[in-house]
Amino acid sequence: MDNPALEDLLSIQEDQRLRLLSRPGINVCYLAMNTQKKPFNDVRVRQAVATAIHKRRIIEAAYGGIAEPAASMCPSSMAGHAKLQDRNPDAKRAREILERAGHEEGFTCTLWYPAAQRTYLPDPGGVATQIQQDLKEIGITVELRKAEWSAHLQATQNGEHDLCLLGWMADIFDPDNFLYVLLDKENTVPPAQNVSFYTGDRVHKLLVDAQRTYDWPRRAKLYEEAQRLLLEEVPVVPLATVPDFRVVRQEIRGYTIYPAGGEYFRHVSFLR
Image 1: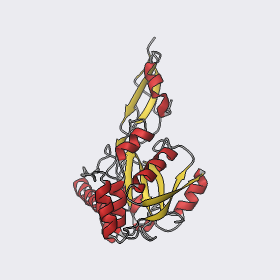
Image 2: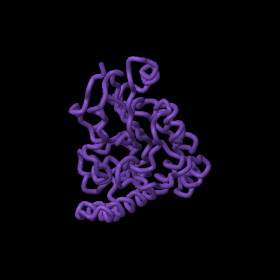
Image 3: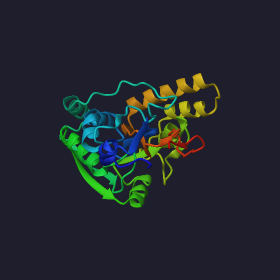
Image 4: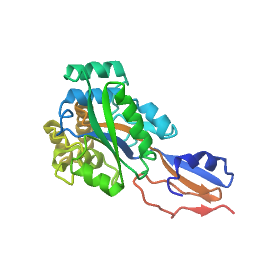
């Protein structure tokens, strides 16, 4: 069984006929802020939002406690991941940042989220509601917009949102598949993959330079610098990475979860 529902994990572990296998996930769930819309075109507002969000509360409420908090859009299990010092959730500091940005009275915005569950977003409404509560503490009123998957993508990829919840699962095991695809300015043309519509030139140069070199230590350094810039510019708030789970029968041996997907059974055997 591929990635069982999180609420079923305990019963699977207690079933003597089954084994639960896991490995670190190469996915990320994130909150995107539309940087082409006021007030999210102001980096201070984006920093205030990021400082207000309590990721561990989200993980306990909507992931059953099993996800890993994410500080970067590049998952921690992937080469090129930068070990960043994430913001500590602090409503008081977030309010101060918001006030310095001229929003002493707060403001109202929309948060789009999908109705459909995804591996990286098993409880979309739970995540959206927790973010709504976190932002309410700093004076931001969030109006939730729930949509079916296709409608959600159409709205967010065309920039109708203020905030939105989305995620990504690796197509290939390379940081370019996360950072360039989701955050480069070349991917802001609707229907955009970069739903923050962030157009940072410094990040763009770093990502393009990384594409042009085969020298891995140099690539890793470029990706690390890009991730540090993105933490400061905060067009998105990475929220969580979910482990990759498989369920097999006890008598199966030799099965391995491959990081970039696909099922390979060449070395699988049955214990009789």
